[in-house]
Length: 385
Image (cartoon, rainbow, N blue to C red):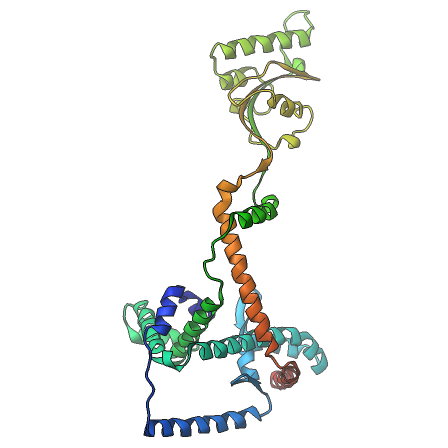
């Protein structure tokens, strides 16, 4: 059921049109008398229901424990009615243990339901009765959209609702409540007040380390001449000298235009020689000995250039720098849209949190606690019979 509600949210402009485009004029005479009698009957019925055990008064509506028990919760990765979760607890606990274990989940579901009810009531008062005709038209439109999902077949549309525990009437009621709530929430959100440059700079500074940090990166090709692995004929054992001569000769050939990668495949003893000496991009500080010397050498040349022979114990390196990026942050001009969106989202969250706090102040905590205790006892008895 929650998925149906989420999938049919509409833009704020459309909601506003749905609610306020048409206004009804009041009736008079016998109609007023009839409406007054109906209102009195409804008030009497409400008062009688409110006095029943296991019924909680939430503003101008009442709530029963079985309504909370049917709210969805996650169980083993699947959404199930809360009652299924509570039944499992009840079967392995005595009453007091059950209350202790079940109270948090039940209280969370109850609080969410009460907030939803109070929000709806507040929203209903905000739009007034004059919007009823516009609401009906908006709900008619919602119903048509739902039916179109089933190629215009109303029977199939109603069957799909049935599988979700709904019918056409409950669908329309749900949609009406949703439209009213969304319109009201839209009216509570801050307007399109422009984001100032000062706000952008301040929020950018707050966000840049977490969201816009740029790590230093090196990417290079490497000819790794290892004197110990040189094949030297005769008695000549000056391996280091021969290795340096080879390195200088290769640098000369590279400057004359020979392909660095091909020379790496032919002369490098390094583990990446098969790939033309190309290393994956690395963070400079991640290079272990003896390759850490390459980070310092990379600072001396620009991408596309080749280093002179670099002598380090057991190796003579020739590096061609492919890419170099210093540690820093994305500049504000590159991420301004992201920062601005975050400011707007935070404004909206602040407004909604304030509304949420106002709603919570309307909840009668003492009555709620009694309701929770009664409900859990009732559910425990039902689950263990």
